[in-house]
Length: 216
Image (tube, rainbow, N blue to C red; front, side, top):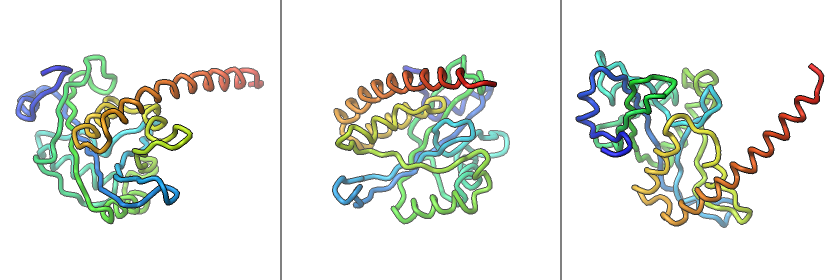
């Protein structure tokens, strides 16, 4: 398939590859930002130990567990809640680029799990209080802003951040496939995120210049 995409069966047949599974947890919501901007959906991602944004999950030991069992184990460690993830939640499998620094022969599996809003809140609470990896591998859960503010912030600003591996493309794919964001709104957010990224590059260069002026 294009872009390294595989069916689940094709991915499982690659016994000489490592497999990593991650999941997007989401729910619908009727809450509003500042009482006027509909939030519509809650999507959870996490700030990783390396400062990059990603989805909960990790490597699976195929000799000892299924993909879903491995993902549930990782979820328990990272969010502190036992969640059931099934084959039906599997959305995508892809070969990582051969230049991937984490593993040259890696297949990433992406799952999407819909929860109730109260379950999402329980995950957020547990991830900061009982999850074994909180403060170590995981620095905190974050919500994806799917709206756009009058000043242009929201989804476009979020998409301009740094993501691990193909997490950003996984997010975009899920948003489109589940129709959580209108396609044109998402395209505009991506266009605007490129502008935000360009401004950030200027800010970073200015910060570097300032840092180099300081005595060692």
